[in-house]
Length: 151
Image (cartoon, rainbow, N blue to C red; front, side):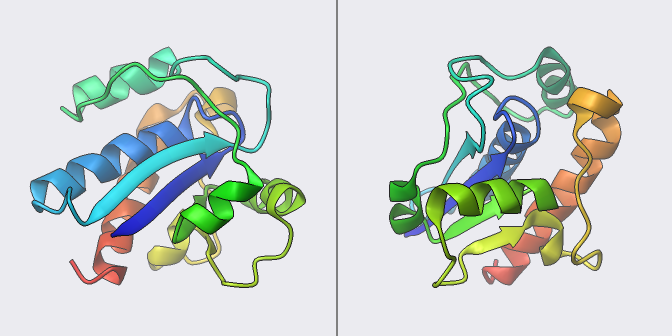
């Protein structure tokens, strides 16, 4: 089984959006028994909080199923448990490495690294309030990740 953990700053916007988008792609491809998907934060700022209302609205609009959840912080143990730790931007990479240490197994990737826009960041809609652009970046990245995984 391939285990994927999407990571952003607070685990209420980008990483849960990526989690639910990827779960939909995995389900649509009938791969739920082969690919496990969750999300986490690099910070403790939003611990216990559900996803941002703008993310809920966008997922609902795009007919992406989602469920209530509580933001959690990534742990050093997650590095051992997951095959891929997928971050949204360069700050996430820096903050994640403070938690997990060195990425000796090359598990840490930016989501857009699975697209033609390798190296680019996904803007945080907490600041931009542009949930449409964030969704487009995330769906593009998740589709690219599915291709990378061979599906």
